Length: 374
Image 1 (cartoon, rainbow, N blue to C red):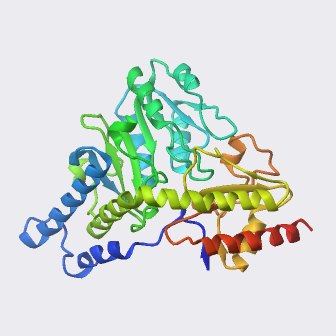
Image 2: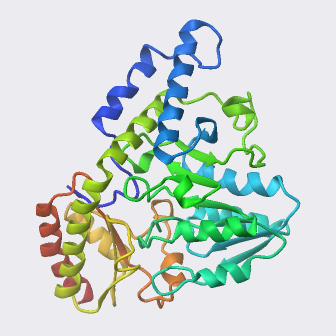
Image 3: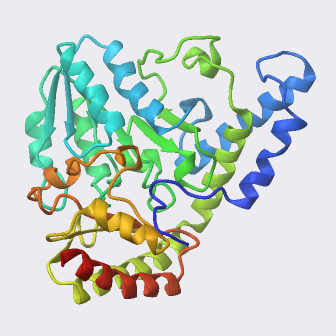
């Protein structure tokens, strides 16, 4: 099997698994209990919180653990909306569904949502953002690294505009972690979403960075965990694994980015050279190091995915949570592609991707495309 869908899920790093194992049998107590046995788990959570805070350049008390990126994105949007009297949000039509669907729900409740136009690479114009801000704007939510086409937004510049306007800025950084700088002070974000399952950690764990003194209401009510802002018994093993995974990813980031960029460009250049009527989607330079998104004229992305699967090659047609639909990608439509090209494939590389695997894909893909076009 050749696995090229690392944007959807990453295998848990063995060092992460080792770190998590004691919390399933030996240190299993509920960390909210007050006896010493349970407080060992509480200490592990706080250590993990401090480790993640150090990596992203914030205070420990600004990290709030969640059940993943989707919850964190929902919380950022609904939590800020419920804490203010203002009614205007700015975003783009290229966001992950865990952002778009909450925005759609807020619009149903009477909020105004402005979706900024993007260029053919998926990037906004900063002047458009400045013009869109009104006295009623309370939140800007824009993804750092686009999960389908890999385009990297200028988050720092957006952060400066938001700060000067007195508007909160939330960035979904799930795909950018492990590849780009995620220091919240550098990026000037007020809220930022991270997901363990994208950085070789366990699925079902994430966090939301919330700047100190920012007004936000809970999304999940319960026992008052996470500084009384997120109810529910903490997933101690997952949290510990998340911190370890993010630490490893940050240590490997620069070296791995160079390696993946080289393999990515070999794959892109090989496909464009050998397959006619193919095109790269997303910014050719300002893109995630592991992302290749290609459209082929007169070829269905779903048909191509299935044929590659028969060859033992795992890819996707977009976000994994949308894999069950045959609708054209909202992201590809959003950058102006016609419907016959809005069904491409996404190949995302990872730590275990080898030059040999890339060579195999470049050998098999042209033959499959030729057969499908017949």
